Length: 279
Image (cartoon, rainbow, N blue to C red; front, side, top):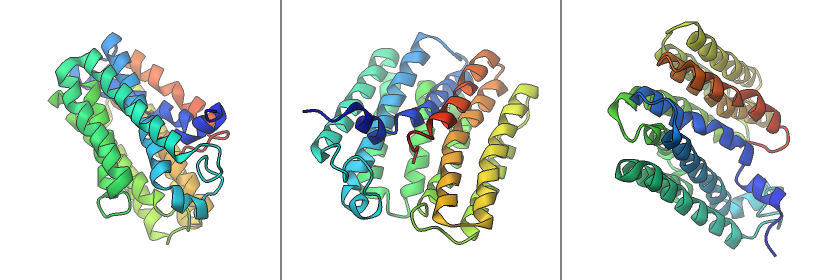
């Protein structure tokens, strides 16, 4: 019998995928084609690879989770390790197939290293010094996927990657807590990303301000009390903060309709996180 749907939703952190489509749209906007059938398909490819990474994360961490997070789908017995690995493999193949069909060789040249980075992170790099850099590289490649690898999307990709690096570094302390210096450094990084994103037009400024406020406020709370619950809350805020950051980068290109469409996912993602943790 297959795993219950609810367990699979938890396994892939399904609602957290709302933070993913904005990557492809930001890349497409930077490259000059903010939305269309190809962009829509490439967002689907990104979501598949993201979900694959979440399932793979739990498969790789199943023995550690049995001690630290026994409520997760695999250690709780609701999803078997084999099923989790099968889900990860199938979603990866699906993501690569969609990318190839939608964007041809140019998209596949980005999607293949993206998928490889995700698998390498979960199996090899996560607990090493290269872990945050690998996760940042994956997000940056995700932005470039939406642009078909076009160079004009590189600044947006690096901005999203920098935010991801900071949040991933903080996430390493979400089980046991941290010293105040870590969330303080993450807060400084958020301010730096906000400055690097620039100020072009009132909509972009408003969206980027929302990013800095919602992400930074949770990080500031973690500076004041760096216990595990506050760190987890700051990590969750950082994950969700990806949405207004992406929307701000899109609005910066003048694609305000696409920016608003991406931004609309922000309150939905935050509401759904109360049912399924994004971390």
